[in-house]
Length: 437
Image 1 (spheres, rainbow, N blue to C red):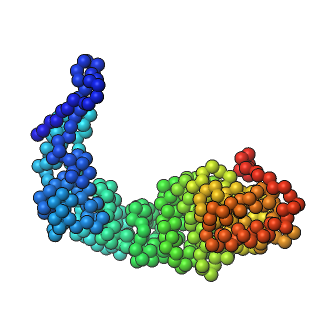
Image 2 (cartoon, rainbow, N blue to C red; image 1 turned 90 degrees about the vertical axis):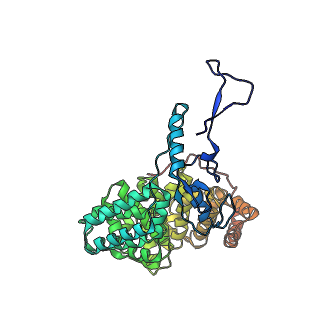
Image 3 (cartoon, rainbow, N blue to C red; image 1 turned 45 degrees about the vertical axis):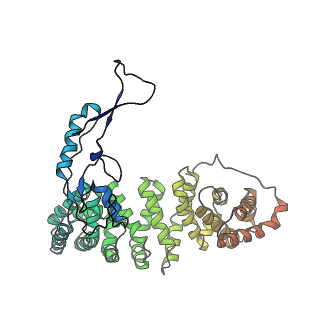
């Protein structure tokens, strides 16, 4: 073993005891040639060069087929654990622990595709027999494998786990949610780190029974269970399958739950995911989208979204503006928007203040209110002028925007122009606006 010491360069500083300040040097053969960090799980390639497993796996995943040191084409990608070197590194760490060096743990042997396939076969068989306890034990074993390393997670996902788990979730949900709640929750927790799902897994998780189960979790489970369910719904709807949107919208109580989550803000994860789920529902091309919009408007979603735009958490602004823009496509939504004194000021305030996409949504929502809103003899236009919309829209055209936003901003300017002589525009920042109760 090599124990390297060197005197620290500088002006000859000494420690409190008068001795020169020394610096511990990690032996070169303990370092990974890729990262130059001390190896935690050294493995040797067919070229004879040893690397840290995580680094060399990432090297090959990036599409490289050569050995980083020798530049030889690697024809056999087997990685042989270098136990001798790993034990030397561990011994060196123990010997130098007084210098703050921590011993590296002995790495676990990575799972193989064959082990994953065998486990998934047992999971499917347990689900077919509706053996919830057997299936629960197997899923927990899979979870333990995944917690050991990112490599294990990739191996599990790449060898068909999402499909097997989603089909098992559907099977147990079809049987009884209340009776199988423990295994259903465990499966959903595992699926949460396997997104995005393959098409076959999407079909199983998007079945009516599976959707009803996730909505049941939103109603009856604790905070952790609610978070896993709403994240799963968000990921499922992100694929744009109209059938999933229609099936979810027909489940009793789901709209009320989503509005409640957005309004109460029980956790950042639930709030953001709920906003996304609502946006997928109201922006869908399904036959029931107009009915869904009307339902959310009647539940007071417009006011909830405006409250979000008053808050300081900008991460929610984009989704809130996207939903408002979609709701204002309906007459009922526009009427609710025009009837709230905060709507126009907040839309104008968010132009050029959050992100380019938020500006697009704000301009579009304002355009819908001014052009298709209540026949109020230009009241909305006058209000927009009062809070500085004309200057903001001119600035949008100057800094650049998409063609659709450009057309809407131009039309808004033309609509406002006849009213400019009547009012002196006021640049209002609305810093003192409080959340309405």
